[in-house]
Image (cartoon, rainbow, N blue to C red; front, side, top):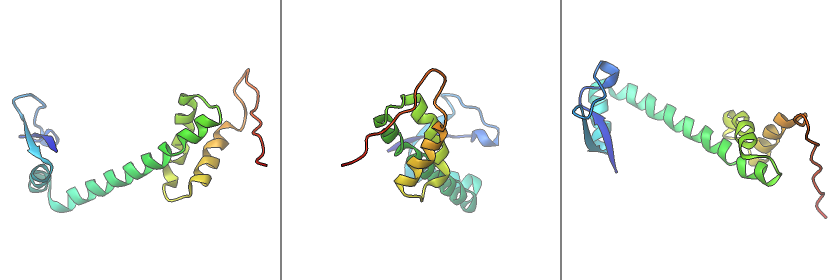
Length: 118
């Protein structure tokens, strides 16, 4: 669980060089950041990172379902981006939002008709 740490932080004008980087465990890297930038600032940054990860997870969960419906990987990834703000929504709603990105079939493709469950 080692992380790269800039001895002279880049955000404070330091340069990203091999000589200016050291390896620290996560706890000590976080401590060094708090000493440099302040506890409140780092708490806010960690919260923002956690929220971004949750949005990315919410979008990523939709991709396999779109792929099973026959959409290409690039199409599924693009449509899944529409779900990033719906991290708390149920998967079914996120898939519905992603599918709304495909309201009109791309040129030269036919609309997909899904079989009904029996």
